[in-house]
Image 1 (spheres, rainbow, N blue to C red):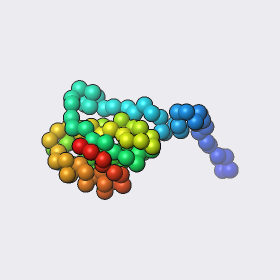
Image 2: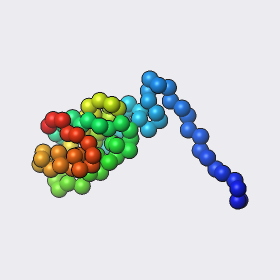
Image 3: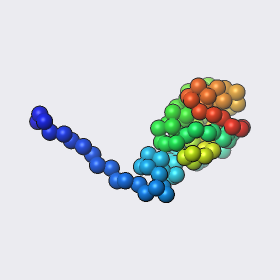
Length: 104
């Protein structure tokens, strides 16, 4: 089928809710909903890809049972980390992923 393009049309989001990947409703893994963890404020996250990048970086740390981000596009997002990971290791993982950890 040469010359035929296949495109998936995505719905446009209104300016109030952001783009489709920047929804203010972040999905939370089941482990995060069942367990409490340490909370951190993270700046610089703007979309679902940012969330995945931070969750992947933090989840790779020794002692981390889960990492979950509640996205606030353009604001301070909440990172919840379950397990016994060192706070400085979490800070380093977030920073090396390209984002700023504000507090722990």
